[in-house]
Length: 69
Image 1 (cartoon, rainbow, N blue to C red):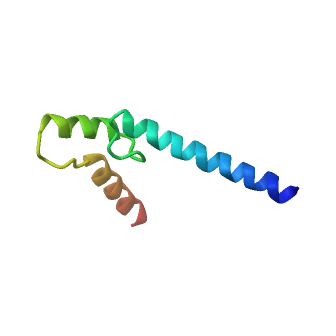
Image 2 (tube, helix red, strand yellow; image 1 turned 30 degrees about the horizontal axis):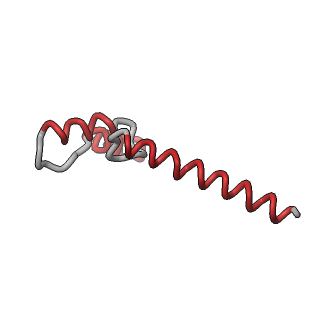
């Protein structure tokens, strides 16, 4: 019985995560985990044909490198 309950809990968590990702993708978010993913996707739409590049990631990496020193 405990295994069944644990399996249901895990299935609910995975289902919620998949549903969240699907909703975000339908809303136009290109990078679901990125804080500025929607802005990045909209910028790419304006610049047709160019891939999305996120300066927020570059800034985050620079901040991590500074903190590591």
